[in-house]
Length: 217
Image (cartoon, rainbow, N blue to C red; front, side, top):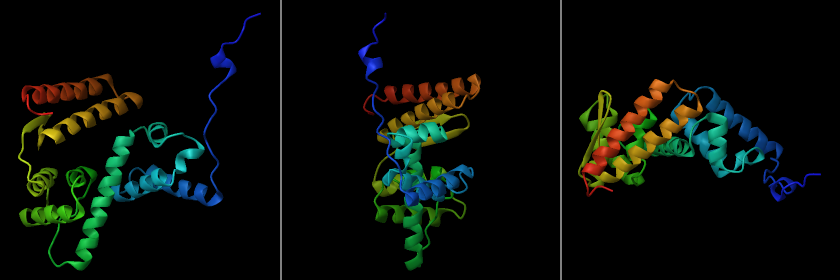
């Protein structure tokens, strides 16, 4: 007669806990917003924020990271970027309600991302710089304004197909991490091999550029 191993005899107990009816309803409402196909990045960011901070994922997952990966096929880092982007837009909208000075409102997560690390007053200042520069701002406009407000000089230029992204040393490392996260997500959702390899090439090119700068870390 075989003897079961200790691991088999003592499975790890689940830490999942039940939600109250109101919490279950809140989770359902948040998930409906996300499931609509990222209708607006601000709504999605707010929904993810509620799920994360109220731990509404706990009935099915132990961590927010596991929930994002299993439920939506993206990383917690990507979810937190959406949360940060939503916070940026809400801050700028609040400013515009009381200020007569125009400020550019990001139209997507990519435009809001450079402003997320800034303080709320810095976000407003950067958005005003962008508004003065263009009526139809690009992601690069927001990146340059954020660098100007933070008083950081561009150090690394990373190419991704036909687009060029200028960033500080710190942002370049973050960009590399983001690309790696995207590769992981592409693999999980079964993206074509060619697309995954192309994204890996972008990551390798960026890593080489950062490494060649020596002082960038």
